[in-house]
Length: 101
Image (tube, rainbow, N blue to C red; front, side, top):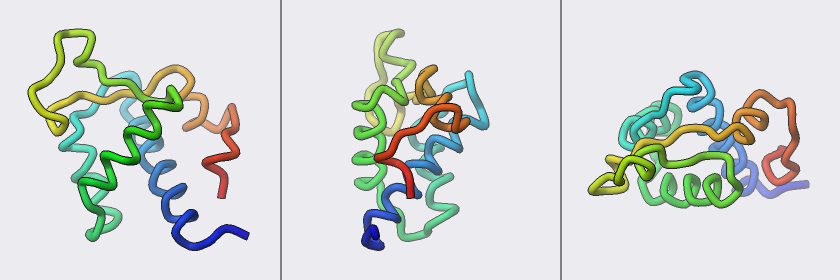
């Protein structure tokens, strides 16, 4: 059985994927994604978003679209979108046991 903190982290990461999936293939600015996440949890901190996005990027589920165009000045200004693999996880056509609750 998972501890409550692990469950919360998995739920948050799945919510990020789901939010990006609603707009796929369009990217979303990180600042806007942060506001969406705060709508679900008013105590959600930007440092948590940084950790969650870093994890999802390392797994290959998200990418920074603006990196291909020269980058953004700050992390908040970056544009993030799902990769094809991230879309499959968000659609639940593929599984990632690390994100299962």
